[in-house]
Length: 521
Ligand SMILES: *Cc1c(COP(=O)(O)O)cnc(C)c1O
Image (cartoon, rainbow, N blue to C red; front, side, top):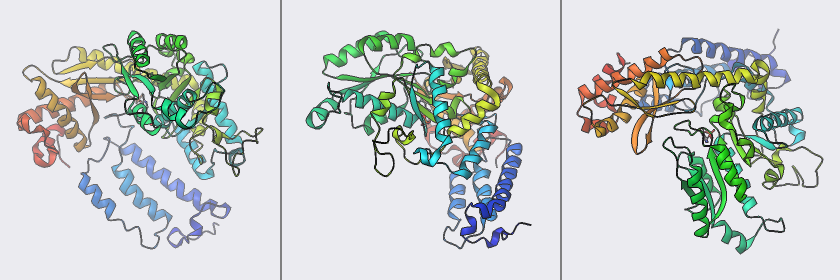
């Protein structure tokens, strides 16, 4: 019989996971798993739709300073608070951002790595985990087409981009003797460094420039085609103009799957120019990285093997739980330039050791690689690729559906899985349609029944679906679009458009939410 005390009398050390508490751990976690499974099966809309003030009151009502209530009760309470009001990305009416339903083997791996709590920094803290992560890095670089690359798992595309651009900066700030420039020479040059990128590139590129201490005008926006893909001829012009103005091109950032439109920059043509001028090409494939395993669309990434660094977000198109991303480089020396050594951890003379901390911006770091590992073993790369292909096919079907729609108008094409559109039937002016975008999004979000995003394309606001759930069908998406139309009709019927900018709609005009969603909580 288990000798562990009932949860309510847990002492603080009983709360720790050790050999003595293994039974309690198993019971506690099984309980959580059962609860989440029950909730998952019962989910019928993306989220509860509770108001911000209701949620704030619930959160504030918890006293964090009382004596402990025991693990079981703490988790029950957390489930009631968090799971009840969380946004469920697996719900067919969740179509807002780049969030995916997650692979079950990866969730199992998450439980394993959380309990074992490996930190993939030095080899002596991680042993086989370091080797498994390195094997996956090698697998990814092979898929990219690097002959002998390197890389490391990161917390996300933002960190991957920052790390790649740090490596590019260090390369730019290396003297002819191969040493880091210092002092005045370094700062004078750093001020002149420029990053050339398309207007659709992720904001983490500009944020990285700020973090890396580049000048305020370091990010140069290069012209694009009508779908927002970086235009190679415009890149030529931008390189020439940068040099003419005394700038030094630190990196060209191409995007393989722009966050808004899901368009892939023409990588071959961009790589050819970067090769010719010896420019660092970074490919941000945070969104499009899953194309590496696609049976039908891998060609969109042709040329990625000529990049010097690549970002891949496994927590987007590889269907991994947050967080799982990697930065990959073609030449291991490029990553080595960003290494730092500490006597107590990874002394520079320990060259025989494989310490992933040498490659990472983080020190203590999760073994996120285990999730991708188990997913690959469970369903194979083709299984992952098929899921990405399914959401791209779905997006294509929705685009075809909307092509003839009298009320909803497509405003952009996609290479991947986004749908950008506006509600604008005849008689609704441009500025009225503009105002409807945030209003419709808010009515839907507040109802909890559907979640769509909004953005701006070509200066005009539009609604956006990001389709990343391979289980979703065209019929499911039509249901969401019906909610969009209903919300728009309700708003048009119930309010002066001039008032639409005053949020939140539901609190001001409860009948709007009712019209949009059929019921009010
Ligand atoms: C999502 C995204 C990022 C940022 O990745 P995070 O994992 O959210 O940090 C960077 N670039 C692109 C193109 C993205 O779509």
